[in-house]
Structures are given as C-alpha cells and as structure tokens.
Image 1 (tube, rainbow, N blue to C red):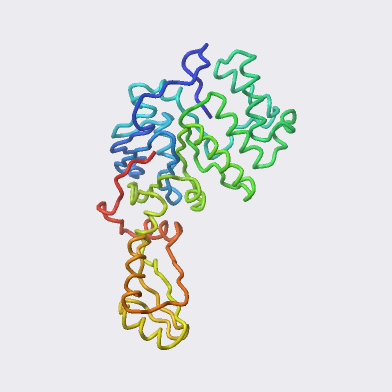
Image 2 (image 1 turned 90 degrees about the vertical axis):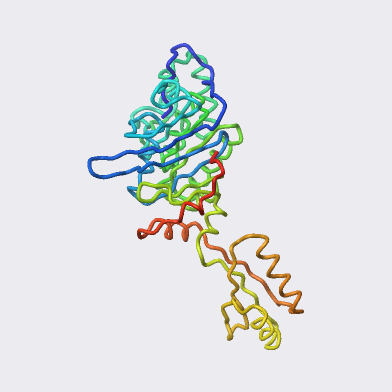
Length: 337
C-alpha cells in the first residue's frame, strides 16, 4: 500500500528531485549465512516500467522491501525519487506506493470503505478523500461492487481494489510485487492496461513477476536476478539476443536452388527433407540484411523466409540455471527507467 504522507494536512503529490526515479549501487542483504542480494546495481529512469525477474527465492521481494523502506540493507546505497533511502526514509515513503504479493484489502468492510480508510490514513480532507475514492473505483471498474463487503470479491476484483487503494496517495513511483499472481488471463490483461495507463501519466513502475510474458508486454527494461546478482539487464529484445538458438529458416523451391543455398551458406544447418536451411541469427536488422545481400550476390532466391528468435523463457532458463552467468561485458549499460 502507499505509505501515508508525513505531513498530516498535505494533499499534494510529493515532489521528486531530478534524476533517476530509482538508483541503487551495491545493495547487499543477508539472512544469517544466506546471501540474498550480493551487491546489485539498479538504475530506473522516471516514467518507465522496470521488471525484475528471477526464480523463487532469488531476492526480488527483498529488493522491493529495501527500496520501499520496509527493511534495511546490509550494505550499498540507494535513492528513490531523488531521496536517500537511509537519510530521508519519510520522503521516500511519501513518493511511493507498494502493492505486495498478498492483498491488503480488508474483507470485512466494503470496497468503498477500504478506499476511504486509505484516504484517512493519508490525512486527506473528507470531501477530497471521497472524491478520489469515487474516481478510483470508477477507473478500476469497481463502482457496482463498491457497497459490497470485499470478502465476496473475486481474485481479480480484490487485486484491482488493492491497486486502487495504493493510488489514493497519488504516488509517482509504484512498486508492484508479483501483482497478477493467481489471476485469470482476463484479469491479468486488465491489470496490464491499468499499468500502461499509469505509466502514460508519468508514474514509474518497478515490477517483479513470475510471468515472463508480463515482463515482455510491459517492461522497457528487464533485469534477471540470479545467485544474488544481476545476471543480465536490457530490453526484452536485447536479452533475447544473449541466448543462442536464434535462426533464419530459408525454404527453397527446388533441389537446384537448395544446393546453391548450401554452397553459399556453409554455416547453415541443413534440412534436406524440407529443402530448407537454418542460418544462425542474432536478431539484429544488420544481420538479416547481410544474409539477404549474400543470397542476392549468389543469385539465389529463397521461396520463403522465417525468423525464429529465443523468447524470455529461454533467457530465464539460460540465466538462472547452473552456475554460469552471462559475462558482465554482455550487459547493456543503458539506464532502466
């Protein structure tokens, strides 16, 4: 949920200082002998979606708890909304909203009462709290259910109410920790639409998720957490290019064209039965253009061309299984919004 603002009578959006919405350097956290975060770096530009992926127990929720001031780090430094996490925790809390893995909705009261409770926790004047609550209930398609006890809500409705409650304080930075776990596909896609609307309005979203399609759909930048470290970081397309297996499948009309293709492209994997070649491909436009130029120079015309690239599932398994990690030199250095 959004942390109540430190100024009891304030209804304005907390001011963010210039710079990245979230900046972390060398964050470390251990529980006994178990190192959960082993010096991770994060840079999240304002107004973007950043997704943190990793297997269960990788430290995703721990990172969210540290950055949202719920627990302290053992080492490193971080700022959120331009405010130092250690020196200005109240200012950080005033700028953020947090929707955790488990719903914070009180099932014994109505959806509207849950919203008004959050408005009271933010010390909003009663008319302002009612106005904001009504607007958010309408935005999240909860008006018809607003007068009913939340215990009777479906999982998707409870999740939408939870997110609506988080937005009562108008946070500019939103932490969503596995927000769609357990939701049906329709509810999940509705949540995606809401996230896109928030980002279009300038909100920064820090997302953890177990659904790789969700990260692919929403995130501008993705970091994969494995063994307490960032194994790789980049856009979805950049990460997919890190994993071998991408290829272009060329199909030929007849045996003569196929034999010519075999001679012109010796690196290709042959499919004699299908009269097709699988040419290794890194996913870049330049590589595809060079391949077509080679065919043109040899006077060969393919009957069909299909591009196959690894998906985020391939990336996830490649980067989070076994001891090997992608070398640091392959990581992109662009900022994460």
